[in-house]
Length: 143
Ligand SMILES: CC(C)(COP(=O)(O)OP(=O)(O)OC[C@H]1O[C@@H](n2cnc3c(N)ncnc32)[C@H](O)[C@@H]1OP(=O)(O)O)[C@@H](O)C(=O)NCCC(=O)NCCS
Image 1 (tube, rainbow, N blue to C red):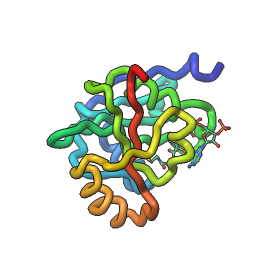
Image 2 (cartoon, rainbow, N blue to C red):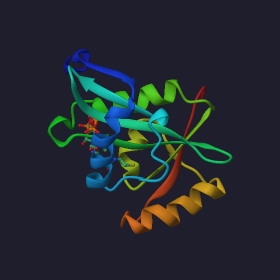
Image 3 (tube, protein in one colour):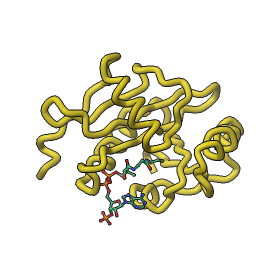
Image 4 (cartoon, rainbow, N blue to C red):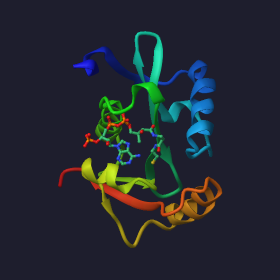
């Protein structure tokens, strides 16, 4: 029932310093951090989580999902992901992740072949963040 107190809204430019701090701490994708891509989950005035829809050249990617440590395992991550899926501009919702078990429970499946630019992103970012074993997954809206 805690989720009734949590609201999701578009991120404001003032939210970005906190989001960037968390992205660094949680070792998430720190490329192209444009506030217009992000949403935040808020409880009162506190940001408790965030995520984004990142446009690449040919595909969009759901990503940079983070929940503050003291609010984890209360359904906030799932709430943000469902919100972003509902607002995703295409039926194929791509994600790159090193925690496939978490996303599998939410209906994502491993995809191969994967869009080239996401494979390149995996090589570029996930390796530099030591996110070994990261893969591309897709959630197909309407399936
Ligand atoms: C991953 C993350 C977003 C999950 O958010 P959350 O609000 O804590 O998770 P939810 O409440 O939606 O889901 C909880 C469930 O997911 C599972 N889960 C949580 N983190 C997990 C992880 N890292 N790996 C696998 N399963 C995980 C929990 O065990 C729980 O399972 P249950 O429902 O069977 O009890 C959060 O732990 C986080 O911010 N992690 C650091 C950043 C990160 O790794 N982001 C994802 C990068 S792709």
